[in-house]
Length: 334
View 1 (tube, one colour):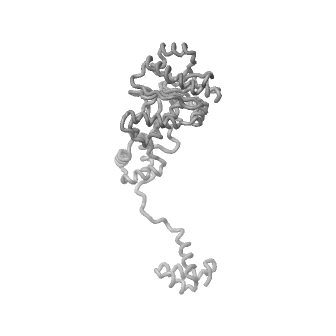
View 2: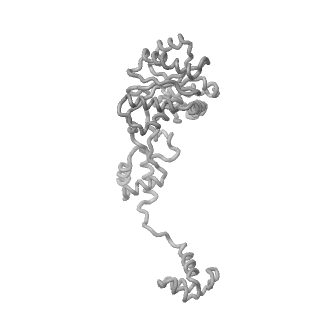
View 3: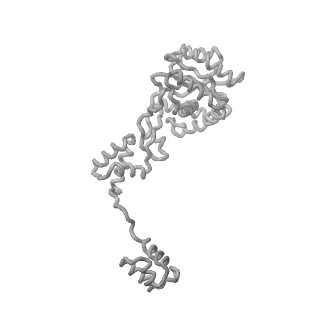
């Protein structure tokens, strides 16, 4: 019995003929005078060039381009709405086919990034601020105490509509939701530096200038002592009305605390925003039953923030500045 490579032209012809007649490989091997494995390998080699089996595709390249255009034009539509619009264009396909083709095109259903809503004047000011700070070193940024307020809810499940986008399109303007600066209520104030975090303040009422100055007196000053000791530092805050009030400016002057100039509506530049995100992600499976339990959970999670995490966030400031300059003042996400 010879190997496949030893088969003669006559043997190959006998194998092909008997195979077409539907004979078994055992019978073919006996008739051709070779091993059954040689018959099997020869038949498989011949079969490699045959056309693929399976159902014919129900959509054409033109149909697929139509689908991609529909998704790209309005990425916030759900699969049902996209399928309805696609079939209305004359395409005959199931909803499952629609979802599969969208996946094959690289689209994935994701929660959209949220960006601040900036007008052109604010973008120009943000760009000018970034250019002014582009040469700041890590050592200079480490002298800044960053602060901010954040709203925490008992349930973190409501994250809004999802968006269809491809890999690398997270920052594409058409795949992002716009947000406004001031939410209906603010609950927690916190501060951080490259040395760690300060104590939290839970706000019980609307934050006006008087309330904010109480926060600075009883929480910011202790945080400064904790994080900087007797060393000099610069305080960062956004341009909320309570922060930019004349009486608040007077308070800082009276206490000899310099305040970092800050562009309007630019939470994406503030590393403490990332810190709030870390806390909320760690709390996503917590299920507090009331406000007091929520506060306890926030305090416990905030206490787990390490100085190393804060230091890494502060070190990202030069990259944030560069990103703003490259985006010509447009908001970015870190």
